[in-house]
Length: 494
Image 1 (cartoon, rainbow, N blue to C red):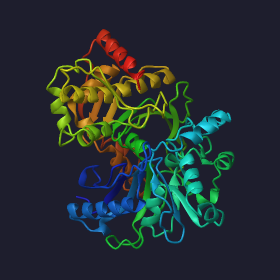
Image 2 (image 1 turned 30 degrees about the vertical axis):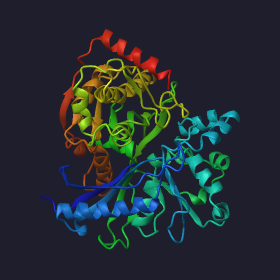
Image 3 (image 1 turned 135 degrees about the vertical axis):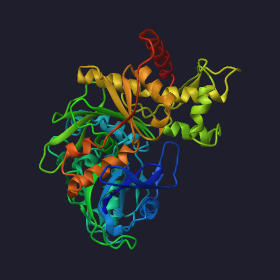
Image 4 (image 1 turned 30 degrees about the horizontal axis):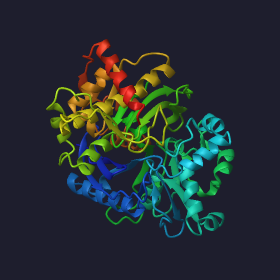
């Protein structure tokens, strides 16, 4: 067995995770640390950046311990992260001046509406591939700078640093020596022109953000810096991969050809379709985004649609309603009934994402009767998780101009056989599940491995990806149409 490994840091919405990956692409060890979710007001979501940093360090230490290896055996580090979440910190102390504003947060809705009224959305979409929504980073940065005492003065004096989570972690891992991001994360800020890969002067001026506050944009497998001052790991371990979590899952699923697609079931669910060198403009409110850029290669683009609440809906049933103790229990509960008996759940707990883009929408449970049980609600939740992806997939096929034959799936909920069969039936396409469901971390490992020469090229990586199970479509066309119709009527109530 190789004496060197890749460390993949997967910093997510509810936990920080570290995976140790060997040269065969196998998972040697994994460690996960959850951290506090902060909800200051309805629709507002924050994280304490120190919680993110502490949980990341702890997961790194535990992963090394579980693997039984030393930090010196790590060949390189890759970072993948929740994307649009943003923080602003003091350039000298490294301390954040405000809690991180999370991608789910809707506090800047009024700012977005103001920009829409001033007819700025068309220009923004043309340059960024994004719709004007509180989801993205630009209005979050603007809010922090305007609402944190002294922040604007410090920004003018160039005493602050701004970044998404990848940039913040890189800053911490390198003891403040490196302030960089990759093209995939930068493409989610609403400040970068995705056609040339640079911060855009017109967008910066629109949002009142100085370029000197922002990180340098690099290819996804660039030399981002090296560890310094961590204590539990030696100095000088190179960080050679950074990529946003959904793009990382696409890369980890070996979706390297035009038309390859994946759906990740995490806190939210996200469908990405590789469109190659062409930035396909959506006519149906999907996002045009950068998938990745490898060193000495052209940009790779993707179409993306995301539902903000997926696994988070199961967490809400568990924690908010107390319907069961463990998230995995939802499948057993849902299987105990044959149908939802007319119950529909629209999980718009933080608004509706693609292709609807209704930040003001709220969750709805309807069709309740005296005979409704928690099992019916559990089944309606799984059906909703699958049906909201149908909305995205159908829209994606319209933009692509052809039907997809299959979609690859990953993330924790992809282990749920009932949900995966629902997904195949409601979409009308086969669902392919790989042996390794943690493809987000795997994508970051692959990217870092390419960056440091651990793997020579993409062809070597493709040999690592293997199928666990393919879920074939079983539902009739008529039943599928009827089910979609009931869902669409329920959506009108959200």
